[in-house]
Structures are given as C-alpha cells and as structure tokens.
Image (cartoon, rainbow, N blue to C red; front, side, top):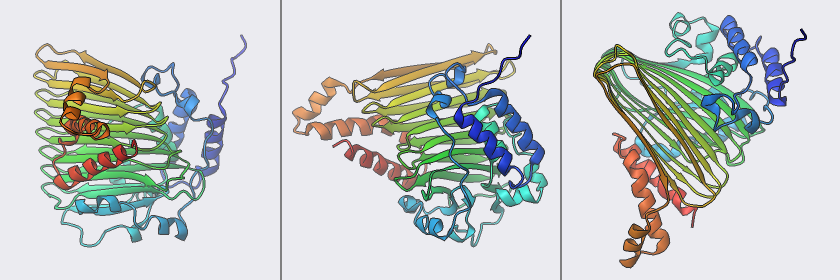
Length: 439
C-alpha cells in the first residue's frame, strides 16, 4: 500500500526550516526541544477540524511564518525605553523583554525584596538550571500543539521565584515589547514559582509599535504553593498586524487564592488559552476576562479548569464587546474529577454585538465525574438594550455617550474583580480610550 504524503503549508515548511537552522543556537534543553518539535510536525498547525481550534483555524490564519526575531539592537531597545509607561500608576517592578529577549538594563532589578529572585530563562536553560529543568513543561503537562511549538523554539523569558512566606510589596510587571524593525516571530517562555503562603501579583503586558508585523507565541507556567495568594493579569496589545498565541499553565495548591484576568484590545488575531489545574483542596479562584474588538479583529479565549481536588470554588466570567466585522470566541470547559467532591464552579460568557457584521461564538462545557458538586455555565449574546438606551437619551445624554456608558457598565463587571485599585482604574481608562475610537 502506498504511503500518503503529508502536505505541509508554506508556514509549516518555514517553521521546519527555522527549527533546523536555529536549534543548535537555542539555549539548552536539546532533547526537550526535539521531542516537542516532533509533536508539532506530526500534528501540524491546528485547523478547524481539530475540535478545540474549530473557531480559530491557525492553518488558514497563518499563511506564512515570519523569520525568528534576532536579538534586539540598540535601536530596538531605544524604542522600548518607555514600554509599559501606560501602567505607571500601578508602580510595579518593570521586567522588560524586547523582541523576546530579556533586557536587564531596561528592567527594574535593584533592591529586590527578600525571597524574590528574577533571572533570564535563556541563562537558566544554557546553564542547565535543575530547578527550571524539573518544572519546565511539567507544571500542567499538555500535548497542545501551540505549547509544543513554543517549547521547541523558546529563546528567552523570565524565571521568577518567590520564597515561602514572602509577600511582595510591588506587582511584578512583565513587559513584552515588539520593536517592529522588521516582520518577525517571537517565542518566549516564562516560569513563576510561588512558595507556600507567599503573595505576589504578576502583570503581563504585550505591547509594540503600531506598524509591527509579528507572530508571537508566548507561554507562562505558574506553580502556586499551598496557602499562597497570586494574581495574574495579562493585557494584550501589539501592532495591528500581530498574530498572538498565548498559553497559561497554572497549577494551584491547597487553601490558596488565585485570580486571573485577561484584557484584550489589540492585535489582528489573538488566542489566549488557559490550562488551570486545581491540585489542592479548598482553593478559591476567580478567572475573568474582558475583550474589546473592532474592524476585522479575531480573539479566542479557550479555558480548561480542571478540578482534581475537592471543595474548591471557581468563578469564570468573560465579557466581549464586538464592533465592525470582528469575531469573538469563547470556549470554556470545567472538569470535575471523581475525587473532587464539594466542587463549586460556575462559568459565564457574555458577548455584546455593536454591529450586524460582528460574530460571537461560545461553547461552554461541563465534564463532571463527581456527584456532590454545584456547577453551572451560561452564555449570552446580544445588542445594547434599546429600552435602557432610550432611558438614558431621554435624560439628555447624547446617543454615543449613552452607548459608551452602557458598554463601560457591561465590561466593568469583569474589570471590577481586579483587587489592585490602580490597575483597575488604568484598565477602565483603556476601555474609555477604545470607546473613543468608535466616535
């Protein structure tokens, strides 16, 4: 019987060439990289016949593969000198990566709090750091193709460790800046290990010059110890032509608190995928997001909340505002293992469509294998309430302003879940700035 030839797309072929060319120059983890790339070559770019990618056909959306970004030069670093300035009110400790490379001279590394260490992922890989090697890819193991491609081609990122009992006074602000000198592909991998009873806030912002034409594949692994309190907020911006794929793998211990928030307003195509593993009992988690799209933007949030320990509480709330010909996707799955009795998990996704051409796709799911649980999910999609709009206009509020007030209230339910007042106010300002683009 003749073997069927596997037909690769130009992007897949280019990625194979890029890996073959770069693998000898990438830091450490050679065997891990080879295994991961074989996984990618076997599966190829995900497409609509793969269930979890049915609404975001990466094979169709990624017509070509950009060349791997070179190390940033002086001009690129100069363009990144003010990266993250929009979040100055947060007063976070800035950690800057330019075109996927950690840049210490642009980062705020002086006077680290006791129990906090920050170092380059590239250095950790190159030196065979045992603490990183034992955790990389193991925090929440997954066969996800985008994660496999990231593992194969990761160049740099940051490794953050917070010692048991340490409480960070300042948020850690990871700034990923695309300098936009030429079209490029960026692969970053970061690891955060938060010790028992520690407290930390991680803010992750992805920015870039307006004309940047980038393909970004970024991944973050977070290991949260027992009784720890961790907040992770990811803000996705970037150039108008950017294709951005992000993966979060978070494992949460017992009696912990974990808050996750995704805020997306820019880039041409965004795929935020989250794999959250509740491995300890009596943990409380809030997983929320707000997405504002216009033009032909496409944003996909895919979440798997895996409850393997009992008596955990999780709340998932996602709000999407769609204008123009944009498309918003939400796929959420709550899994409750047989031993995870007393689980309390509720998930909701709501889309607000501001034009007839906008599209919202939602697929919430429950997989429950325990019998003593409280779980539920819901999804809605619709336009602005005409009666409420009339009510506001009848009180002298102009039409556009009335619409803006209603949109801010809609998004505000998700944003209000952020505990840090400065960051909450900054994101509300981002919502107001987005609304002005509609005028």
